[in-house]
Image (tube, rainbow, N blue to C red; front, side, top):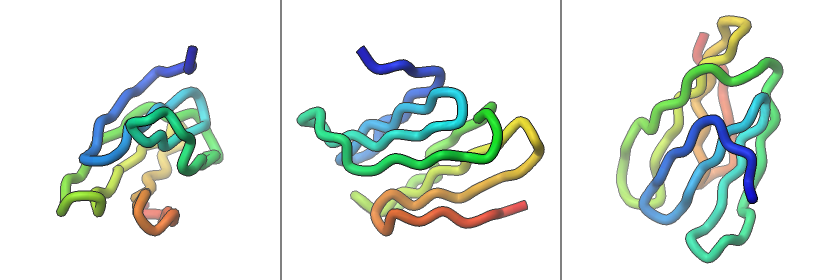
Length: 79
């Protein structure tokens, strides 16, 4: 069982968000990557893109916004 408050489905992954954590799983159930944010996650949106190159917009309860790119394992501050 995976704790989840927000669930996103990408072309090759499933993304679970719970409190301050984001977990990227492949369709066969393997954890590919995890991110830990500074504050609880209150908003997530898949920003589309080519297959396996999607971006995720993440809004936190402290007002910060991040763009997370699973294919390059990075995140950057938007606001």
